[in-house]
Image 1 (cartoon, rainbow, N blue to C red):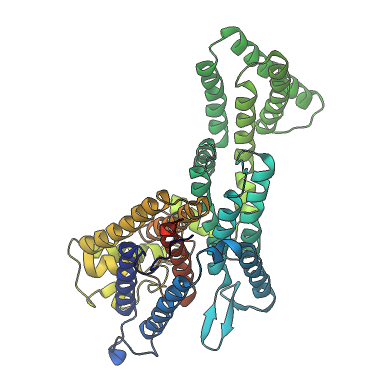
Image 2 (image 1 turned 180 degrees about the vertical axis):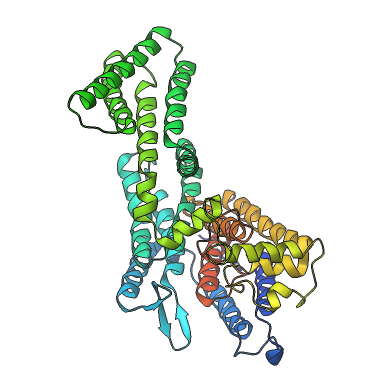
Length: 474
């Protein structure tokens, strides 16, 4: 027999309290960001802060409704929820309202609904459902393929809406998969990819190729200290290089040294993999595949940057890396945000006293750049309070995730932490110039009904699942 419990009594009220505090602080800062003396009342529903108050009350209703549902509802209806959200993503491409080049919103009167925000919790549910299924093994090729489909199908649909920022948020699920047993090499390769991309933008590619070429045999020797084997590998590369160079010279192909090097590395990789498989030489195949992939990626950075990325994305990366800087155009938002935060000093200028805020120097200050309002008016102290509140929330959610008896609940909980953390770190990184401007909201702070409701649903589904852990056989 299942023991009946009072779900509201068993709810994690510390997390709920943090949620309410963050929402209230965010609402007050929205008021400060768009303050108008002609509309001084904080409950003026014609202004953003008045509308946000309506959405806050609606979010509380949504949270309450989630607690009224049976905890098994979310597991049982995972796939229908996921499919319905995908249908919404397709529908918005066909019937949505285009704003600033993005077709990502349904417009209902004066209210706009963004389906991509709600797709996050649906994807998290789907991952939790699949990863908690019977006899699941994360390193199985079939399993990884299905995980990839669950994550990348919504990503592709969101990219078609021209909303790159929302699509990049799905990278957060890497942390969830890592917790569930995905090899740490995935995180290492992801970090290395970022380093290679930045290096290829800033440094001559031939220098990068030389570094990679020197590093590979050193790493191999540290893992497999055999001078003879290492010497054979180096000899194969030198011979392959001479062959590629000779063919290029004799046949007058006139390819640059980059392509000769690439061809030599390709021949070396194939040869060493064949030898390594026959002789059972440990690590050789992995290192050569890694080296070839790293070099290939380095060669394609320019193409990706110039032909795949949009102009505004190129400008933002150039601005972030200091390649090109224009404080009047692409760098304006971040520059003004840093001025606003820096001018706040230790204690801040005081509530409604921020000059950068008051005179609208920072665009999107109530949404993507809401944190600079905190920095200017409340200073370092206020900023640290906000960051401590978020950090406490993340740590609490990790603690709650670890105490779950159900794999489904634990996995979903780590998905919640991953999504919220990525939004937090990237959004604040944008405002202080440490991350490119990709236009994602600060959870519970930024103005907007869609983001607030989606974060509320994401969080309170987990809190409802957590309350279920007290139900056990009597």
